[in-house]
Amino acid sequence: MRHCDLISGLGRLKHSAAQLRDAWLTAKSYWSDQVSRDFEKNHLQHLPAEITLAVAAVQELTDLLEQAEKELEDPQSAE
Image 1 (cartoon, rainbow, N blue to C red):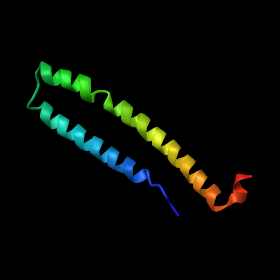
Image 2: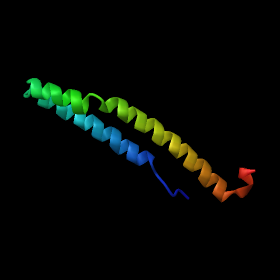
Image 3: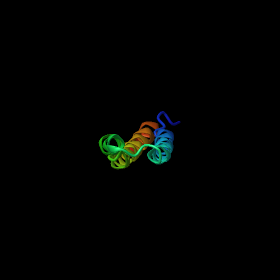
């Protein structure tokens, strides 16, 4: 029995990041002054790297949780 599902959250995160990227590309075609460049630099430019780190961390955590669940179901596997 699965107690924790982090993978579906990752799917939503990736989907939302793609939507944000697409919306920003559209906005950039109408808004291209120094303020928009500053906004992109200060708020958007770092997101792909941070999302990549978050995905890796969640995948590692998922692996650990799956291992813990298996050990709780079968105490013999912990030995």
